[in-house]
Image (cartoon, rainbow, N blue to C red; front, side, top):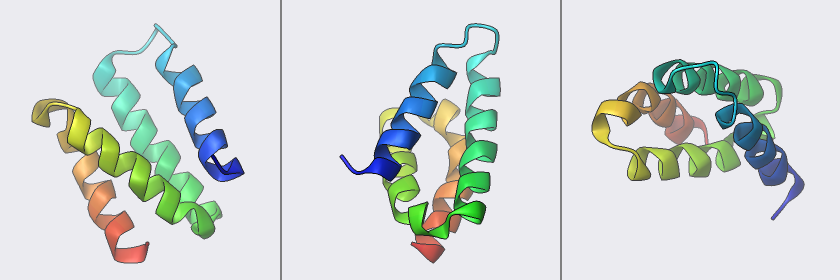
Amino acid sequence: MKLGELLLSAAFELFVRDGTLSSDERLNSTVRILEDVVMRWPALAGRCKKFVDSMVDDLPSIQSRVLWPLAVKLRAIA
């Protein structure tokens, strides 16, 4: 695992463990965080794309729909 992937995985793992947010709030916040990461570090777009694609594939459609716009953006740039 490369450093960028490790940072994304560690940050997301800590974020998911926060019990104060609902799953919808966590996903919405995740989208905002990943958009910010890609804006600041465009070199991580490919890694973020893999991460988002795996979440879209693994989550039920009702939950993953918030990730779809980000997935499309990442496909356009990565």
